[in-house]
Length: 359
Image (cartoon, rainbow, N blue to C red):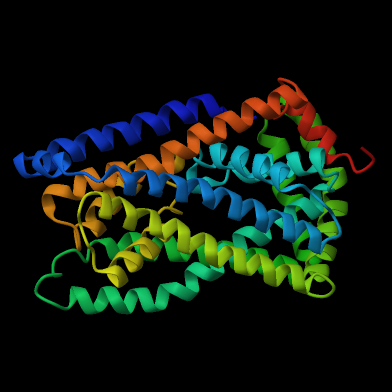
């Protein structure tokens, strides 16, 4: 069981320290003067847009499940999304949310683990696909700006960008190959579980052994789910793609509204391009929830189009809406889930029940 309490403390500490450092280094008299003229209606609109993005993701989950022949209410899908968002915010590369969402789909929609895994992976795949499609024009926008006198001197960000791209490509390549070659997926899964069983403490060995017994069945379900996505579930998959595009447009517009609230009118192509790059940097599994890395990278990238006196304030406001609000909304969803399924909703017993194909 992942120690989420530890991750929460580490993530929050790193993020707060980074925020304080940025505020300390960037606040001046001009910053304070600008804050007196802040337009709160735009900040509230940014917050509402962030909340709306949760609904868009929930709708995407709903239609992907429909592709596989399962029905779920939007409210249930939203509960699932928010619970995952909380745990994703506390783990490196945001990977902590997926296992819990899979378990919850097993509970509230009676979806087998293999098919639930296919749904959650397809969500990630669609997100990555949209980001990669946007990455090429974004790099051209950045290259054009960095080629000018105004934009020289920040090429150090390239290293982080390359690392992020390599990690994403490697992960996607392995998963796609596993879909095309089921035997490879089963062999790889077995090797990983055997290794884990050898290294794990005694109390976890029985659980890992049970996973070895059921993993091949779940991989078969995973494969059949993807075949269904591309055959009878095509229409619902197209709708899910539409929701993915709208989600990212909404997500990237949060920063725009924050800037309008601070009376800043940014270069919109550059603003969206930097956020595409930042999305890839945030995948780097260095800290829980990419805390610290996100603030530093955002400060570096956003300084390209935001006045120096307002960069720090912008980063803190944007991070508060897109990160701390996630934690707050996710915490409320987790409380609801625990009330519904009990205190062990995310515990070992739940995992073993979810992995039992007869349950």
